[in-house]
Length: 182
Image (cartoon, rainbow, N blue to C red; front, side):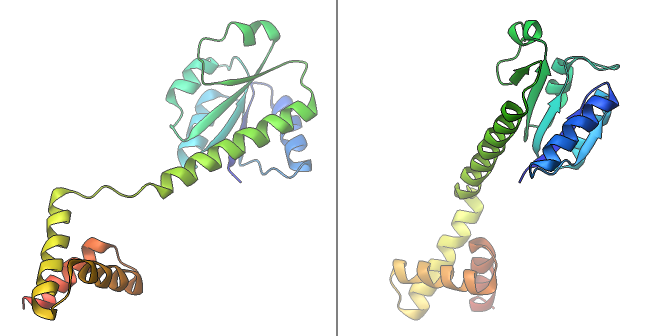
């Protein structure tokens, strides 16, 4: 479940939305009445959804969206006219009067999308620097020379040690080099 921030200029509106979300199994992390409060909450949290109105006392939704961390999605709740004329494409908009089931389905869809995006990013292999690649290659070469291993066996050995020790491949290669070259 991602973080949810509810931000509306009228505290009553924000509390009503929070109540609806809580009753339907969502956790609301912050309720704000200004854009700056929403930004402060967003910077403290790792990512999620900001459900907000069109205009705050201190800024418009466009400014809020501009300053939000990249890990946050915005759900704008505004009049049909304001939803039509919105400037930014990557904002989901629900028009008022708000239907509860539409709100819940939209929040669920956004939550699912954010979770999938995070999962895909975690699955991407980390890019190693040239120095790190050279260190791993050097450790493999040393293992191949000293222990009569093939390159595949040496790589598998470093991988296994890395997993057993809970360290990454580079750290393990560094340990192997320091032990065998000492």
